[in-house]
Amino acid sequence: MQELYYNSKKICTVTENEYSQFKLLCPYWGLSLIDKANVILGALSTFMIGVHGLSQKKFEQLSQLLQHTGVSLTENRLTPAIQHMHIVFESVHHMPISIKTDSGNTFYLNPIKPVQDTPVQSAIHKQIYLKPKKGDLYITVNAEYEENICEYISYIIIQRCIKEQFQTLSSVSSDIFYLLNQNALSLINPVFADVQKLAFSEPETQMSILPPKVEKKEEPAAIEEDQWESCDTSVHTTPQALSRRRSLQGTHPINPFRQNSGPVSPIAPFQSGAEKKNSAVIRPFHLN
Image (cartoon, rainbow, N blue to C red; front, side, top):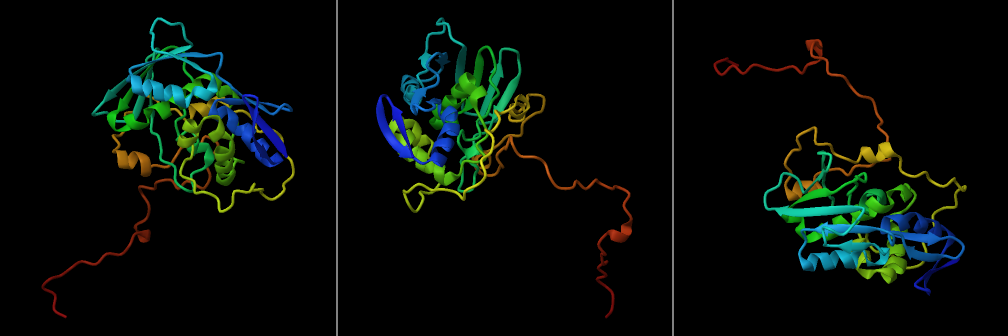
């Protein structure tokens, strides 16, 4: 068993398996875990981010979501920061979120609403994955998504600061995620833990859930650059307008770790008619 500490206080005791899962989750939550000492720290304490265009209420909400990370936020456009984010809301916008960079590229984000079988890898940041870009970001948001924009911006900020620490979460089950969120993260920042509940059901028991014992594997590798690129949607193609219902429920989340499988059948425009279905001609005046 391992004891975890935050702000010089013990917050919970976890199994060895839960400890290894928590260590993988920490960067996605904007945290770092000091091995052996088992001390949890904010991982963004050395970063300054400028956020512009939010109401005062929304800015305070964003600050609460990221309070545990130690990041510094400013509304002053003249304050030096590693990045300034300029946010505008439009009542009619063809995508939920579009982000334009200083270099002129535009990227489209389509946040999902996780369901019971959504992998933790996709659900943890609601499929908001953007390879960190240098320079200012100009973010246009469909007004229908304004309610959750602070949550989405918090994920972009975490990724901008410590994306290189992310490792695959393929080994993290939804049950263990739920327990770690409830027993650890909720004691560190209940506001952020609340949006991280995803859509997973509460396990039947609050006891530690241990998977079958498996042979110890090597530490998972950090997410490669090309895997992050695969999560970006380039401006070079015109996106199809999506309704709120379709964008949240009718799409399949991108899995940057999934490999393509299955044969591909080529189109054969000159295929023999023998394989076509037989058709019958209707003869309205034909006598039986």
